Amino acid sequence: MKVAVFSCKPYDKRTLDEASETASDIELVYFESRLSLETVSLAKGYDAISCFVNDDLSRPVIEQLANYGIKAIAMRCAGYNNVDLYCAKGLSIPVFHVPDYSPTSVAEHAVALIMALNRKTHRAYHRVKEGNFALEGLMGFNLEGKTVGCIGTGRIGEAFCRIMNGFGCKVLCYDLFENERLLALGAEYVDLETLYAESDIISLHCPLNASTHHLINKTSIHKMKDGVMIINTSRGALVNAQEAIDGLYSGKIGYLGLDVYEQEGKIFFEDMSSHIIYDSVFQLLLTFPNVVVTGHQGYFTDIALRHIADTTLANLEQLSKDPATFKRELTAKNQY
Image (cartoon, rainbow, N blue to C red):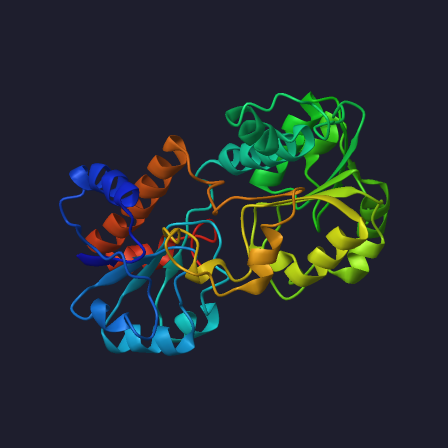
């Protein structure tokens, strides 16, 4: 089986090469280009493709893939909001993802953003490099005793709640389904209105869909505590960036930590240091001293990359050896 790997960086190639050493039936060909209507022709002559978070898998692209005889789409991530699943299903192209690559990787990065914003380590770092050791303006707060709201309590949300419980925080949760392990830990499930009103810190760990698109907006921000900290390591479109900026200006939002951004597709994962970024909203966000933005690196740990590569290769290898059995037995755990 020949597989075209899109959005492939050097670190992806290294881990996929290692994982494919035992998969003799799989031939991986790497493309740094993102998949789009402009680049979909690169998939000609391949049996399957592998994609990442910012690849375009809309209906027109998937229809072209079907015309090229693509038998499967292997996402190297947990999210699949960029995939037209209905189109893929209608064309009998299985789509699978990596549901459990390392929940603690993203959860720990969310905590890193909290700590950086709270203790202002991003500002202190630059001060010290310039010989400025003054502490004025660097005041933080104790996490112990604070109320932390977690929206979404799947694998990543659960890992995040466990960490915050360890800090001595009161943990409030919102999800369509309660996590029994978190209840046993002492976490409390509440409605969104209560979570907004009582949380000092709100962290997003939910999928992006029609009901969560722009979950953080002027209406929900208005319901929050003054000076609330908001953390997003899930999907950029969970937060309406312009309305978050309005919240920063008013002081309603006291801290904002983003590892994802709604319009990140054209800039994240690339070296843009010598380019003009034509996004005034994003550029404005970077000017706030109480905003920390990272480039979608929450997942980026050694363990997570290995798990992503191993899971992707395992599914492709099964499809290569026995396509019929693969399509029958692939469960909802990693196929849509």
